[in-house]
Length: 505
Ligand code: SAH
Image (cartoon, rainbow, N blue to C red; front, side, top):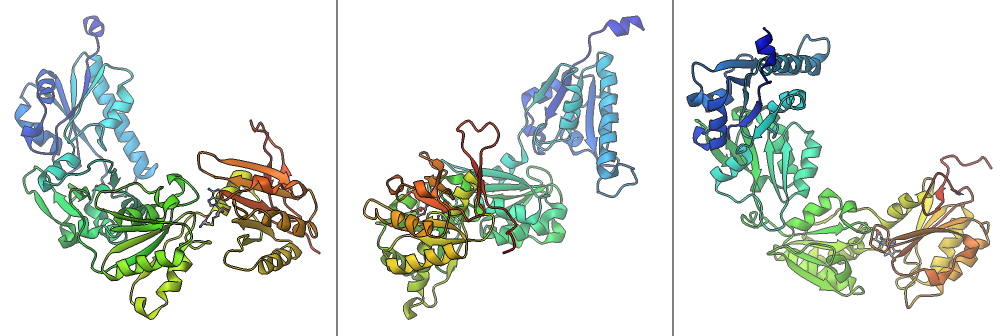
């Protein structure tokens, strides 16, 4: 046997075969199979191997065939390690069988339907063998490309994002991902189909969704997904939500106003639901600064306006919706916190607009983003007050500050000042100092999440109004709030938090 031991080990190939039609195999795949000694393929216990049937015409009698037959297909098994344990053992044994051929100097081609590194069984062999043997992966046409080709619909264009989802995800996860993306392909239907369909419906994407079964194989079927009944859906099928630019979604049945908050800054704090609503709108209405945060989309009308015309903006939005448009009114942060939601609902209460649907979507508000940066200063009871006296008299503000201070609430102060409102912060500080210690921590958070972010903690007595502007929020601690330097914070910033327990009086 010494002659055999001296033979160099064979090469391992993961061979992508395309989605089903043998003529969609690459030239390289054919070449590799022709030169291989061993042809291996995975298959279900009682089923034939789909991969083998695609490559059938290239398999010769002198090929050694290795059928790697899955021991289980569903999550019921007697294996002590459960379904995962049974699979793990199967992959180990399958890899050992291939390794024996490779050690004997034989070239092994592992066939893979579609692309080997795209949800393929080949990956389990690759992970176990590629670091020990010379390995080449031959890419293949995926079912994603095949499905789009059969539908004849572009998947994504320009800046559109394509999301590929396994249908095995929890339904709520599918819903959130479908709501937020431009285009999507959902794989692994079959038993997952009812949940996938429900997720498409809940996310509002069902009218755009198509169904493709056995793309490029015998028995291929395509249909609008809404028309496909659950008992007819096999595993080899996908749902496709194509490019919105190339295939605009059907016009909305009726107009509506959706009030959306973009979060305090940047897309990290934009919820998937809000992202989806912004993408689906026919019209965007909002203050220029907030509209500028929303990417321009072809075919979407943008109505930007000045900051101080909330009612006119609300009226414009409601008028557009009454004419059948799907309107997103855009605020920063959360739309219900000193922002457009109330402005819209005030105007919508008028008889003229009684029948126009209005939905408000929640967003991340500035207080929460600022608090998170500092630690958890709002971790116990707190009050939210706007220091702007544009819509309420200063006396009311002062009274509320006093009441909150007496009740020892932490405070989040929105709209603390601007170029034209410069004295409010000083007044608020002096008023609070009547009730609270001079070294109460105050978090001064500016442009949180944005390019000019700065978060600093100062003593209440040192709060300087000139350091506050329109992009600043102030978080004032209660008597219990602590400010502690900990760990190697490069900027030497303290962590600020308010304990969960309040002492007995
Ligand atoms: N709807 C918004 C608030 C609008 S009022 C929200 O929920 O956050 C505008 C005030 O919000 C600003 O004057 C400032 O006090 C605060 N603000 C908004 N975004 C901010 C940010 N990124 N950093 C700090 N403060 C912010």
